[in-house]
Image (cartoon, rainbow, N blue to C red; front, side, top):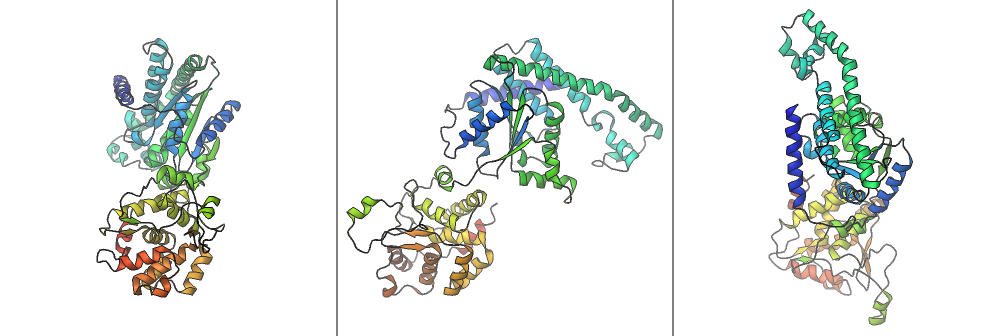
Length: 489
């Protein structure tokens, strides 16, 4: 099959060009979430249990699955054969088998330490070509989707219309031929598995001097693929690539993948049980470390004076109290959010994330909405806390958000909100204030201003609110832009 050879050559050439332009970094250089320990743990588990061949790495979108796989690949390359396959970037192709074979051929060939023209590699591609031909959907060989309709009443993608004129005798002969060829096709699939096995052994010998060392195939972004492509890829892995020493690590947002499967088989379909057919083990990444996530993913900086962040204090140390003798200075309590590793914007986001009990996925979405709002506010000074609070509140409880925008927070409303979302506190050196109280002060100032008695002996941010609201270019009317930003997924 000449077309497969052309495909493999093109894939190889493009991959090598892309790789030649990349920079070099050591594996796990930017690992702040303890992902290396996870990779080591899973590798030890995979290599100690021959029955575990396919692992599902489950984590929501935007939580670093690609970072995890790319760095694990870089680590494995030292002494293991490894293939990285981004399924989403290939789902425009037809059968995922072709793309996966091309990736294996290209990446493992370069790891064998041998000439890619050797007979064993040619045998792998040849057997893959025959396996593709033998298992291509019958529509490609005899328009059997139409035959399927004739015998079962099911119209596969409307293909049956093309064969309305085919006689029953011809249809029956076609089905009989397919049945007779079944054993032959099964042998072709087994030949492919043998060829893959030989390639795995060669790579293992070269990389680790141990023909029993496994080869890893890492599949990324499966949940972003077309539903039919994702299903077909899982089926191909199960039926074609189940060979000794071949370990698959597949990264998915499992909830999204289940939704994709139901879109094909129907809402009542038990997609979770269906997925269990393919995975020997599920591993859920820990995404609870919000501090390190913010350090990696929300590099806000505080350039210029257009973003005001409450004059809050990021950190507290005993030395602080030795330097400051003001008797009104107080120590922060356990609900006060402090971190010497974060800047002021990150501190505000962390306090709000903990208050509104955000998952990492929701935190990432809120940060996107905040940034989208910031770039669309034309005021000279933006009050970052108030903007961020509104975003978090809107995405956590739309009814409370509407009530707040219209009426602010009465004492009773603040109590109710605090019962549901226990407020974390922000530190101002001489006091700590809860996030709901700070938001209430903003709304009250926006509606009627702050009296001198309210401002006296209070955090500096109240003075800043009052002075800013006297300016024509500061309004605190963020509702419209936040509503637009909320449409971002």
